[in-house]
Structures are given as structure tokens and as C-alpha cells.
Image 1 (tube, rainbow, N blue to C red):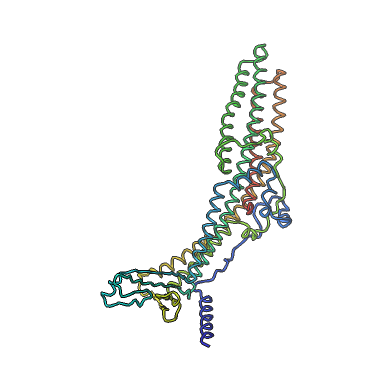
Image 2 (cartoon, rainbow, N blue to C red):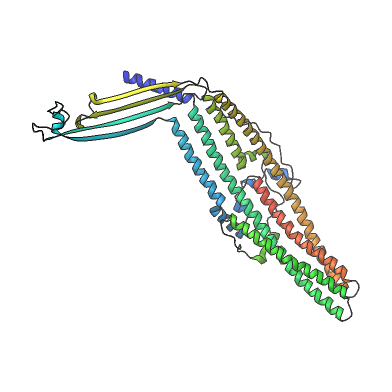
Length: 490
């Protein structure tokens, strides 16, 4: 009966300890989500938004199909330093959860001891002790030695009773921080893929601009030779030659700048890849075609704005930090109440090993204590107010993160739509400018116009070709931006 009563009391106590947690339980805030995103890609974007898998839910290798880009992203996800650091932080926080959770349980330690003392027999007889009553041996000869043996076992336990749920709230907060770190890791993945793709398309655009510049230099070199020949034959003027030289050297001067930008972009990619600075292996001659053939979907399933709350890792991280702050209110609230603890020590000692577990040799000590804060100059109350203020701050941060996510998607939709329009107009401008240059050169060779007309049209064509490469880059990067804004990449 006594054992049953103890078990009943223990079960009741455990139930009470587990069931009581002061402080508010977390409730997900109500978010004002728009019905649809601003920035339609097409008149029927609403229908497209709900058909098919949303762009943000697609795997990155289904969005970026260029084999070179896929290889770079794969390498970066393996070797990038930010990715490694993020993984290290996740492991740190996972271990921190275990450390914090240990505070919910008792601590138990134990020890063992053994002593052996050998004394001259005469030393004990001098104190009137001629017989060894401590498990040793003696005789009447004062030269004989007396041996004393003793051994024992000890154990101690301590438990800070989590009656108010303080330690459970601490574990709750630490777990939220752990999950926040995991979402930060996913943000690192998404950001890295965004940066790799952005730099890659910039590199391809620079390759295309360099190719256009070299083609322009070759064409202008021929024009310079033609004007020189005409001037020497009396069919042209020295001014025409100087204007042709101006065009030729202007294009030549662009080469060092473009080569510098290419090297710097390669170095940026190298850092993202976890490499030392160096070239990025690729077919440079294919860059114009790669930009021209990059995916340009008219309609993109973007999903509903409410889906973004689950897809964006930065939004999920902000919510986990809010959960942590909410739990910390409970931690601070529990400090107003008494802290309860139980300590105990026990052990056994004997001069004979076989009697070490005899009941007469066992000793123990058990004590309980309760500590109530009386005066702390407002420390506990202000700590509680600080926790409440932190919770309010992180609620505002959470709302701001969500609003920023909606803004990012809308901006990306507008950027993608307008970049398509810009690229389309630049293609038409290049075609028109190329024909204008052809006609101007024919008129000049026929003596029907001055070289100024050729110069003007040639300059327009060159600038249009450079702008087209930039427009193609911007359109490709706008799709990257939209994919990232919709929570893709993890």
C-alpha cells in the first residue's frame, strides 16, 4: 500500500509539473494578404496563377536548364562558404536544444572510494588499542603492522522542479531558434542560387557584348580601309578617314573595359563556388545564343499570395523568431513565482566489502527548498517587460517581412513583364539599325552621301546591339528574381 501511495503521489506530481506553464501560448498572427499580386504578366495571368505548379515550388534545375549553369549551382551548393557556415549554425542550435532541454530533468552523480592504511602495530598499542577491530590483523608483537581498510559508494541528485514551466518554455524558445536557423539555411540556398544565376547571365551578357564589339571592330576596320582608299583616290575626304578612325578606336577602347568586367564577374562567381579567383570554363561563342534562347514564358503560375507565407524561408524564419519571443515571455513570467528544488545525497561505507550494502551502513539525506523573490529593484518585472516588448518588435518584424515578400513578388512580376517588352523593342531596333547601316554604306560608296551618315547609323547599331545583350540579360535575371521572390531555390 505504501509503495502504491508513493507511485500515485509521484504520478500526480509529474502530471501537475507537466501541465502547468505560465505565459501565453503562441497563436499565429492574422495576416492581411492581397487577393492577387500586382504586376500581371498577361491579361489572363489570373487563370495562369492557379494552373500548374507555382514557379516557387519548382526545383531549381527545372527552371535553369543550361548545363553550365546547373553545374555551377551544384558546385556552389556543395562548396560555398556561406552554405557551410549555415550548416554549422544548424548543428550548433541543434546541440543547444539538447543543452536547454537537460534543465527539465534531474541531475544524478555518483562516486566510489576505497582506502587502505597500514600502521606500525606499536602506534595503535600506544593508544591502548592492542586489537584490530577494523577488518585488519594484529598480534602481540609490537613490530607487527596494523592494516585498516574501508570503502564506500556515494550518490547525489538535484532537481529544480519545473512547476511553472520555465524550463519547458526555455526549451520551446530554443527549439524555435533551431527551426529559425534551419530556415536561415534555406534562405542561404535560395540566395546563393539567385546570385549564381544572376552573375552567370551577367557573364554571358558580357561575353555577347565582347563578341559584338569585336565584330564591330572588324567591320569598322574594313570601313576605315575603304575610306582611306577613297581618300587616296580622290573619291573621299580626310574628314571621312578621321571619322572612320574615330569609330574604329572607340570600339577598340571598349575591349579592356569589357575584359575587366568579365574577369571581375568570374572572380565573383569563383567566390560563390568556394574557389580561388580564376576563369569560368564555358563556350564563350555560345553566349549570344544562350541569352537569346533563355526561357521567356509568357505566363508563369505564381500561386496565391497566401501560399507565399509557407514558401518564403525568410517569412518562416521571422515567424519562428516570433515563436521564440513568445516563449521567452513565459520564461520571464515564471521568475515571479517561487523556485522549487529537491536535493538528495546518499551512500554506504564499510570496512568489509561484503557488508557494504548492509542496511546499517547506508546513509542518506533528502531536502527540499522553495525560494521566493522578495526584492530585486525591479529586475524581474523589467525583464518581463523587455520580453513583452521583444515579442511586439518581432511581431512587427514578421508583418514587415510578409509585406516585403509581397513587394518582392510584385516588383519581380513588373520587372519580368517590362524586361520582355524592352528586349522585344531592342530586337526590332537592332534589325532596323543593321539595315540602316547597310543602306548608308551603299549610299556612301555610290557617292550619294557623306561618311557622317554611315558614322551615325553605325554608332546607333553598335549601341543597339550592346543594349540588346543587356536586355536579354535583364530578362533572364528578372526570371531569376521572380523565382527567388516566390520562395524558390530550396
